[in-house]
Length: 268
Image (cartoon, rainbow, N blue to C red):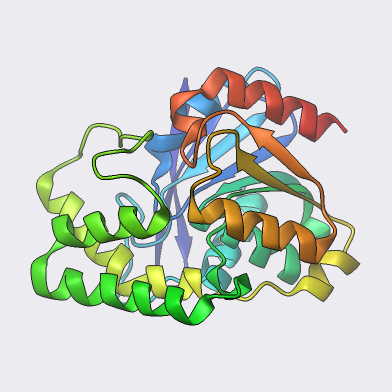
C-alpha cells in the first residue's frame, strides 16, 4: 500500500509515492515513471521507507515550462528535495538507467546525503572510446523523433541500445493515456536523452565522498550498450560491480529476485 504526495519544486511539482517504514530508500528512474518501480517497492516496503516518483516533466510530475530540459543536476536536486521532504538526514538510493545518472549527480553534489548508491546500468556514453559515434546515434534518434514520431525513434533507440528487433524485456505498465504517452516521449527525446547520455560523472567527487557507490549490471545485459558504460564507470571509480537479475529492466521483470540482491548490497 502506498500514499501519493505532491512536492513543490522550483518551476514545477513532483508526484511521489511512499511505502513501508524503516530507513529511507529512493528508487529513481529516468525516463521511467514511478509505476515501473512499484513491484520492487512492494518487495522492499517491509524493511524500508521506499519512495518512488515520476521524474520532472514525466507523467504526474509537471513543469511550468514543459520545454525545460531535464538535466542530471536538476533531477539530483529533485531527489535531494524528496530526502528533505521525508525528514531524513540521508538515504540509500537505487537508480536505474537515467536514474542511475541522477544518482551519480546527487552523490557528487551532496555526498553526505547518500549512504549507498546502487547505479544500475547508467547510459554514460561519454565514458566509451567510440563516444563520437554514440553521440551521432543519439542525435539521429532525436532527429528521427522530430521527423517521424515516437515509433520510429524508439525503434532506433532500442537498436542502438543493443536489442534485437522486437526484443524488450521490460514492457511498460499500462498506459495512462495516448496523450500522456506522447507528452512523455516528447519530453524524453527532446529534453532528456541528450543531457543524460552526455553527462560526465565527477569521478573525483564520487571517490572522495563518504557515500558508497556500487555499479549494477544485469545478468543478461552482456550485449547491451549499458553493460559497456557500467563497466567503464566501475573501472574509473575502482568500484565493485554487482550482478542483478535480468537485463536493463530486471527490476520490472524480476522484482523479488532483484530485491533479494539489493538487500544483500545495502546490508554490506
